[in-house]
Image (cartoon, rainbow, N blue to C red):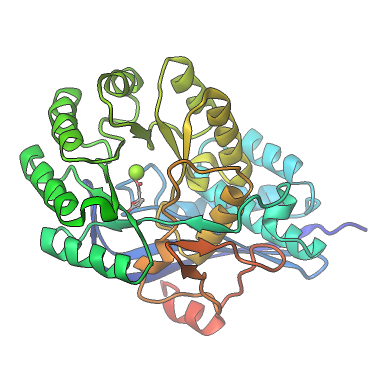
Length: 373
Ligand code: MUC
Ligand code: MG
């Protein structure tokens, strides 16, 4: 008889960051993640992670709402169902629960991990097979201090850890942000690609001024300069400047990706399993982007090792990520809850091996960092 889903437990885990991480809408000192442990009637356990940035600063789901909505609404839809028909389970969740993409992503990750373990296959193989096993990873400079960011960048270049850098801007007046970015780019020169993420902080007129100066300073990519829903404005900016635009908050799923491309956007899309409700949804978006000639970028909501591994299994199935990836979440955290950390080297990260996600929990660390409410 095929296995059914028997229990789904969720835990809130708070891990401190190695330094303050400053974005336009929040400064993080710790990352909070919801860890999902799903068990099936054949004894197989699947792990998942649902993580966002800064409570409600990034989007409508908070760590606490993700946990509560899984416990109250989503887990009961899955308990007792056959564990291996992922398409049917995904349709069931989407039919009975709107939105809650991060929570759905955490559950889908756990279902895929369990299915991979059951079949003795890595998640990338369940998704058709890996086309790359070492993925490029950039680093985000976001200490809030120009000299500290420059020192951090040189350290990572010297360690052969990262050679592309993303700068978080938008919290300060545009002239101050531009001076900060230009100083970092001037210090790094041709040794590194420097990009910026404005996280929706500018209006279009400010974006025109800011992007003109950033293009002049040699910046390679401008991420989400204006609010997510201003698709027409993003298209105007993409047409106006030589430096490409990266749509992040503007594209959640395949439908957004289709609409933006059909309306004339050129540039790149940031893929995030959390935005698209899981690995299947994010690959649908990737395939729409590929059909429209839009570049791909493997994005993160600063997940820990479980969410990062899940994303890597999805990105590995794609032929090419024109803009690489930012799957550095675990490196921003002081500690980890897995027994074997991801293998970061040579400016990238290795796709984990082994069945499922290829990740094992460190139960002591998990207990230590779990929120005790
Ligand atoms: C975002 O908006 O891209 C990715 C890297 C980082 O530092 O923040 C995230 C979120
Ligand atoms: Mg972004």
